[in-house]
Length: 200
Image 1: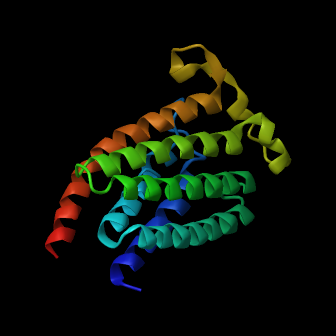
Image 2 (image 1 turned 180 degrees about the vertical axis):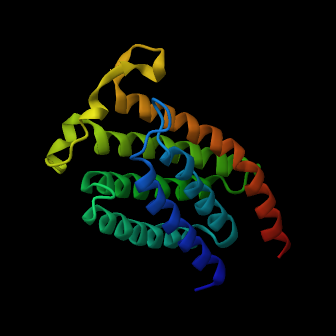
């Protein structure tokens, strides 16, 4: 294993484990702290894909998934996170990141910004939808009957100003908005790192 792949795996593991804990803590009324950390997983995946190709990126995703989920389930045993959140995180992460790798690989020959932006946006939409519905929607309570996420079902104005919606829906919409913003911001470090990779 190359040093670059090892760094990618470590970065992915840290991002997933931290995000699973941070997503349980609100930042304001309709955003979680996890929204600030998780989008960087797409940057790690895209840089690995650009540097080493889709096969290597899938390895980083798989290794990061296994290590990150192991950390999450260990934390769940100590009540730092719940089983349901760990499961939702794992499902959403794997689906979104593998989709990110595929979309990036198909668009890699186009403009430098198209592959990372499109793959991150599509992956983020899948990740947000899967994670928030499995982690907090009332229809998934059978996954962890002892888990009390009743706060997530409270009806509030969407994003504090729209029609009434369950809190988890507002959290998901706000989360996706942050992911969109960070996908745009991440283009700058992606471009800089891609140039260094090309020059190496």
